[in-house]
Image: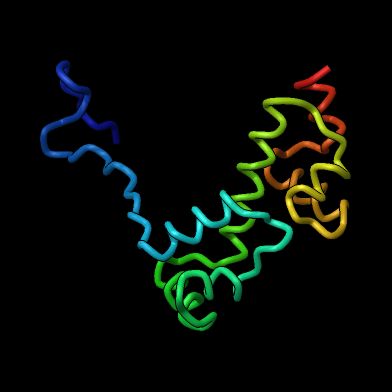
Length: 131
């Protein structure tokens, strides 16, 4: 069955338009964790040290992040992705250097994360977008 369309806006007045996606505001705790991660040394920042700098226990931090439907590891991954994008916009770095700068202990962990973020291997990305 076809729905009748009106010439004005394409929708019959009896059919509501689709809802806009809803975005949730971040809690103050999640926002503060992101600021710490984006401004700090990702190789040294751990959840317990971030919680301490916020004046709360690790358990409280975990609980508050869970209330925002997130976790420390997810926020850390987003901060690493953002920093990686910023670095690669300025200049190309070898994967080993970038992995170290983003706090990865193993370069292969960085390569897997990079593939997850971009859908491309690091070397394929370089061929496509750089030199």
